[in-house]
Image (cartoon, rainbow, N blue to C red; front, side, top):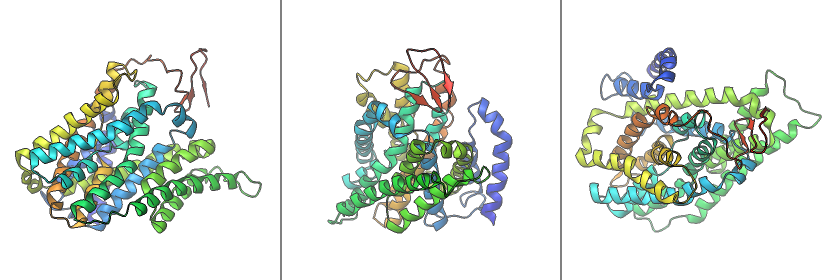
Length: 410
């Protein structure tokens, strides 16, 4: 009851401040994070939660699933094929390089063993689709940059998961890494994410079924819930399933996507804000003080060195402008995926579980404060009249071509 009361009150405050936040560097994410910190055990004690509480891990998982499902609907398979060159660099080179640089910082600054260092590197490697969405939805940002950030942040959560599980097993001293089981989970997640929405959309196209106008937004909700339930029941990768399901809906069910778009974004936003409130409640003064100056130095290196250096190397001779590359280098926010993976580490019981979680929590906190407060500043770098590249095609419902000046809306 205390959690519901706190969330309701902070949500109302965030709504009342949302107009101001839209015009300034104030972020609703920061409002919920700060409120959670003040209301948690570390300060007022009104929202008592612990990292091991089921509500924490469940809510973080649901929030990430909802966000990935909604993000996947922004693109279709055709968009991914035509615009894969830049996201491929970020995922194929940027992700592993970020992991390795972060691991090196954890080893040399904190003194963790290489297994634990690689584990924390894997936990912090993925970027957050929630905060990337702040730029993805801003028309001032070049379309190919929005596409890059959207695809990268949507896919790298699932790609980082195998590394987390493998390094966690190594850190625990296990010789059995279950690689076959991991591959099955990832493949099963993709199959569920594609098969369920495709079957649902094909059924609606038959003469036997038709969704009414009032129930149309619930079609995608039902699809998402079924994907989530099947993923849970079969132990498929929920995050890959969510993103694949969103892409499948965008590819085969344009009408379903349009009817769900606004409603789905509100659902994802509610889950996100609730998870941020709980995460803020886990950040206590004791936790912030437990990592020492080396922990804070590590968090800063993870944010301002690891990602920028990895992206700079990955995008050499890529054709991005200097402003676009600088934006990608900076805007690699850490969030829900890292929260979920950090909780997996905490629940694993390995010797260094508590220090690793503390480092992850501090890094995510700094990232939320920094990235959620600079998205408007990054967007202002770019001219409103930045032209859409010819290869990009459809971006958020707009179709543009270089050999024509006419623009039409779907």
